[in-house]
Length: 186
Image (cartoon, helix red, strand yellow):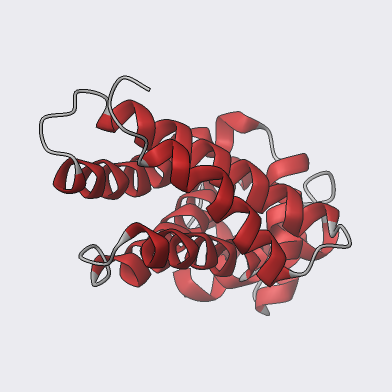
């Protein structure tokens, strides 16, 4: 029943937006009474918190799964694959992404988004450390890289500029690869 309610909540949030997100709409979408919904969730805020936690965890799982077996690849192969994995994870439900980014108050999702960023950043830092052992700035570079790739990916999905996906991947790769793998001291 919890899964049914959560899935209905996702549908309502993506379709109707945050302002119209209500437990009565979720209950109707789930085919249950509001009273039944309240047996599992205290209120709209608790349900929204679970939705955000799951949304960002699923995105993180997709990115991590896509990258986990590729950490031995050279940068020219790993970086475009990482960008593609991030785009795929965020595109999974672009309507919901728009609502989450543009409407849902950050207090409901910022901790979950930070966990996703940390997961991807940790993978990036491990990769950078393996490629350049002893460099003290791997975590910093990983943060910059993840932040840049995320921002560009989200904006591309939401803005839908006249840029093909393949072009975006090429451009982000051209942007981040020299930065990520520049020689020490440069």
